[in-house]
Amino acid sequence: MKNILLMVPRLNIGGAETYTKLVAENLQKRGYNVHIASGGGLLANKLAQKGIKNSWLPMRFSTDISAYLLKYIVKKYNIDLIHANSAAAGITAMKYKQRYNENMPVVFTAHGKFSTFEKENIIKGCNKIIYVSHFVKNDAIRNGFKENNACVIYTGIDMQKFDKNIDNKHIIRERYNIKQDDFVMAIVARIKNLRNKGHQDLLEMMSKYTDARNWHLLVIGKGKGMFKLKSLIKKYKLENNVHCIGHVDNVEDFVCLSDVVVLPSDFETFGLALAEGMAMGKAGVAYNIGGIPEIIKDKENGFLVKYKDIDDLYDKLSLLANDRLLCKSLGTKAYNDIKNNLSVEKMMDKIEDIYNSVR
Image (cartoon, rainbow, N blue to C red; front, side):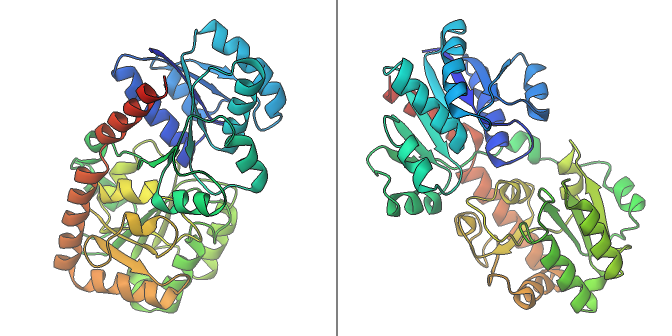
């Protein structure tokens, strides 16, 4: 079995998309012939530069049309196994299997919760379901998914990418007027609904507490909510301390100069960006929600915060701002935890085992 088709509706920046890119690159390193089926996007172009081609498939427009087109992709590239990511891709793969090729092994990675419709259309005939956290798995089982073909595989972190010291930190500090002893937070997330990933919560916290107004926040990411975000920054008079970095390829350069990574999201099934920041030796601070407690061990490698409680968010961050030894200690533990438990090598070993088990 050498020809693997990875499916995802789009290949822009996001959890399922980043996961698909990571799996594709590492399957290629392990000698597999990898092909992608998606609606295209920024990450598709990056994969193409590495020789991993993308076939356009309009899964979000129509899973029926996509299932029909899929049979030609499978034939052209002599696909041995399909690995689908996100609901639309899973439904498309299942329709293809049921209608055109019942012997095709299909593995599905569940990155979030499912509706009843999605459950009924993915569960039938899927050889194996991978959940990105125990939170997602337990929720699925409560809602009717079977446990006997399910497993949890955490998304792996490329330690070679994040485990390094950045030489140009002083340049970034000078650009944003951040002094050496300033307390710096970093949030890496898509900027959409400002409540979704906690951008607004952070701004409200910084506005409310006098000493927090002197902290710095690096906002890394882009999205439709950027204009509203900048308006709030201006409203709260935080222009000198909240820095909108936008989308950058060198995320690690900015996270490296921070003291802590924050992600006070409304909801997280796993929290990949948080784990990546912790892989750089940064303490993690996030709301105690979803799959976050599977990454942050409270008071060991970061802090879990009461859900939607900006006062508790301030209290936890203030502890780190006022005790840099504690901050560094938690960050060291965060680095070791990610390295030992969430390496990309462990993830790929488990995925390969699943591929071999369904053939």
